Length: 407
Image 1 (cartoon, helix red, strand yellow):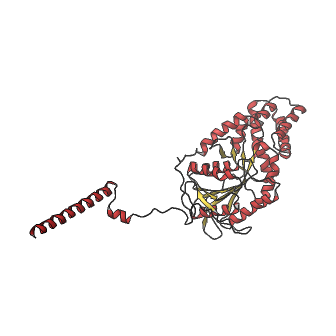
Image 2 (cartoon, one colour; image 1 turned 90 degrees about the horizontal axis):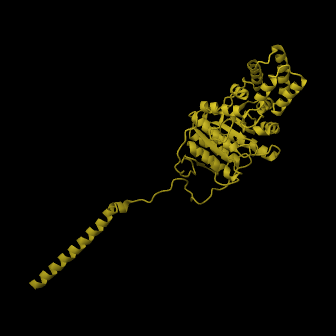
Image 3 (tube, helix red, strand yellow; image 1 turned 90 degrees about the vertical axis):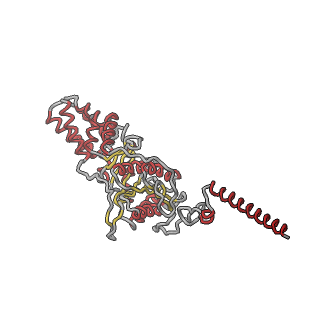
């Protein structure tokens, strides 16, 4: 019996040794993977940042009425805030060129383009001008798209002053022409862009809202992106609204502009969404995030399409429910000349244009469009584009513009 008891004792001890070795082996495996039994038990499943809805399920379309904003939009760009924000890829944020630096560069580029000023200087420096010379000067002014009214004014002033001056000295002629051209361009117009936060009717602070409009092909979306760079260079906090929901690439293009300078973009979650809804959501997001300026891009539209022009009025009305509209900028292609005048008239009637952005002003002799469009609408040219580079947009400087024409 004693022998059997010893055998059972050895068997129990053997089993305990085997079990202990197994537990030690299992614990070692967990530790090699950086885990303990406790961490395995308490580890949680990661949560997805964003909406509570399934990520692959598109948002429902807007159910609002004709003037009611919907909610089918999301914040993109570099900001992950907002109801349907997605994590943006890491992008190196650029520092845009200062306004002073780009003014010098753009003035040099405009001077190289030649055109109106150099032609007039050449004609006026001939001396003893006869009627055919004056007719050539008048034709030059008309071809430069100054317009018939301003051309008549300039011709009368030039005839009188050249006769009184009685000289062909280039410097004196240049000073004379500079003075008259500057008068036409009207340096007294207020060309400041309202981009600082404002106080609404409710007494609350609101971001300055800038609505950008124009016909197809004038470079509206590009202008919005470049304008964002101008404001970022001046340390403004900016948000972009991609309310061009008809052109599939427009929102992507705007998002790319925003990513490059660290600016967020509010965009629709589907093509063809209500643009007024997107504009409303952009202004709302701008207010909630305390930004200085919201730039709203709109779809290009022909001025003879009444329905599309009415839609612009709707966008403005919807935005106004949430914040005052500080600016409505009309983007015009300088190369269209007088064809742009009718566009300007119709857009101004639809949304009360407050300023003009002239694109593609370089490489054309039609610099007189600056005078014509200001006279037609009674609103100033506030920005000019003189190239395709990201910083080829600058505030319009009347004196610098005239000097560039005459260099």
